[in-house]
Length: 219
Image 1 (cartoon, rainbow, N blue to C red):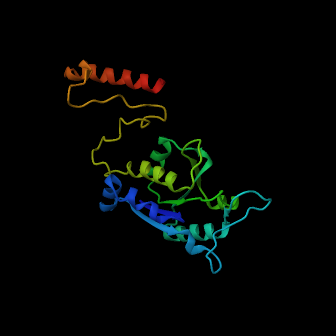
Image 2: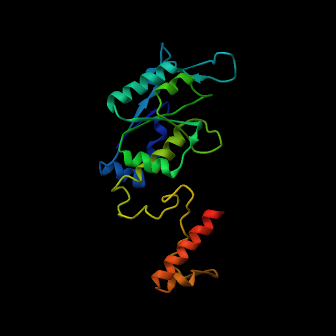
Image 3: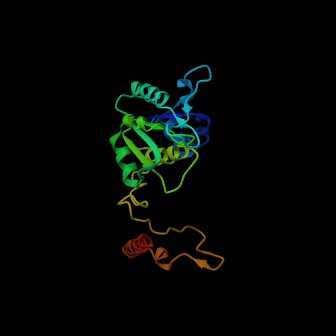
């Protein structure tokens, strides 16, 4: 999968994407991540990418022309890629979305907003708008990291094990929570591992896991 990120701050990403499973995914050639510096599409001697909003208001908006020119370059690199705009106005991002995007095997183009937002006309070049929660961040970089991570880890071969993600939270549906898990030691400061997990009775263990998953999903 090819992932292209349009941003004013490309230096924010390597610390996340060049570590752990995300680095391994790139090392194994399962995903290719590249950055498009929006500033390079700025106009005038100062490479301006923002301007004051029509109708007045505080702050600055990203201009439509640099954004669209950057998207068009990204689409030229990968014509079938899906253009994603992280925004508080988007639909809430869920595990079903990450599964769908990973299964489609199309490339992804992320457009990271900044300042007070973006010229609304850019949405004509966007395929999907997602929100990762009901709060406001300083830009689209962090949501892009979250969404990209959730998709990359579902690409076959990234996590290694064939069934690594099969029983994870939200994997069966967007409301399902994974059962609690334990490892050694059997007892720590008076807290014990549930007896059923030490019993070796696989049918009872499976029954317990289903019950606990159901309890957690109801919270």
